[in-house]
Length: 187
Image 1 (spheres, rainbow, N blue to C red):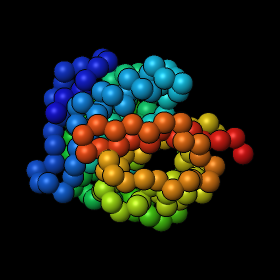
Image 2 (image 1 turned 90 degrees about the vertical axis):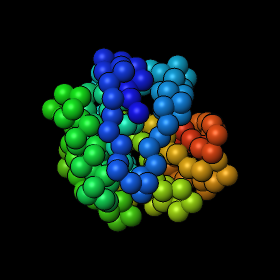
Image 3 (image 1 turned 180 degrees about the vertical axis):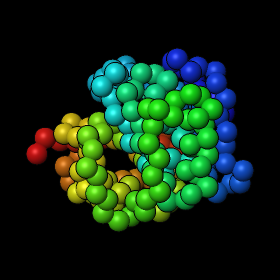
Image 4 (image 1 turned 120 degrees about the vertical axis):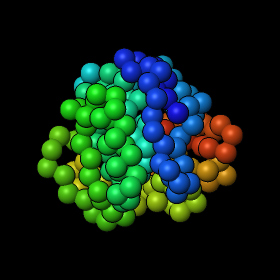
């Protein structure tokens, strides 16, 4: 596993030692970022992009965003071992100064006092329907900026219900993975 493009292109990433984390494949990561950069979203990430990497695992999505010009990334996971891998990858890449790492239960309301995030990645365990609840908790806690873009990964055969306040812009699939591209509507 490695960074696909940007200032850190080609740099290797560590993966968790066990199979409890499912890192986003390089093929899917590349496709996600091409859609963000060249679709109706962007270009994203840009120099004002603040990234929230939920269920971060290895941190590959947030680190890829930093490599491509994002200003800051906050990595959230409920598992200390996964968060440790993300942090070790950021240190290894020399990107830790533009990162934050927090152990959080994303099924509960979260409180955030910092600047809101405009690019959110959600890559929860498949088939557990965590995306709607996580977005609602993050929204309530002040994490999400107006007009933010969220990319939610699911299994290919999963669907997302309509999410209040979010507009589905696109759904794409590769192999066994699907990605939903959502935009936060103005309130």
